[in-house]
Image 1 (cartoon, rainbow, N blue to C red):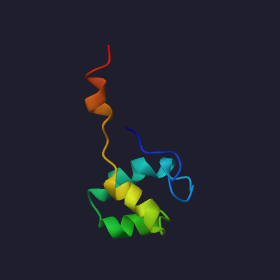
Image 2: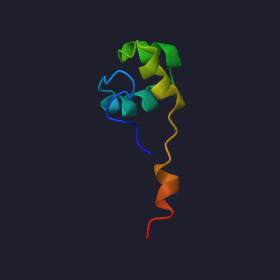
Image 3: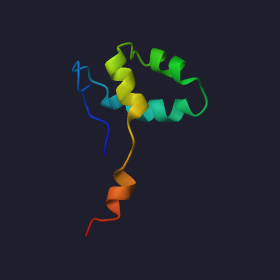
Length: 63
């Protein structure tokens, strides 16, 4: 649902970078944004590129 606090593979803290990534991704090249945020490992990059935010969809089913 939410981006993990740490990378699942290497353990690097990445959760605090998610909001900045989403804001900058719309205007800039994704590769440059990931480089600027310091995400150099492929595991961290794939975490950001493949994450789907499902919080809004799951909230529909909350009682």
